[in-house]
Length: 121
Image (spheres, rainbow, N blue to C red):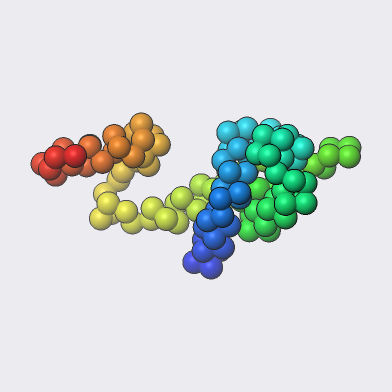
């Protein structure tokens, strides 16, 4: 992944509404949900929602699939994994490590790192 693409994706997620949309789509899984459901759950007007969905799609974080009169949106898990990989490349001074999610959250990871280094978390 190029730095510019990573910056665009992070910039898109840096907006409160787009982050909420993306998290909702991540929770929905690969099947996603239609735009109306996203708008209802997040209390967004259709025009505002459309603007944010288009931005997330433009940077490659979500995909839209037309189904009759509706569009079903889903998170692009490959794109998210690519972004996370870019951000964590060469982390931990080249030592193999797991993301905080796999270890039960960032607080647990901080404690594990502190124990390893002999510090208090």
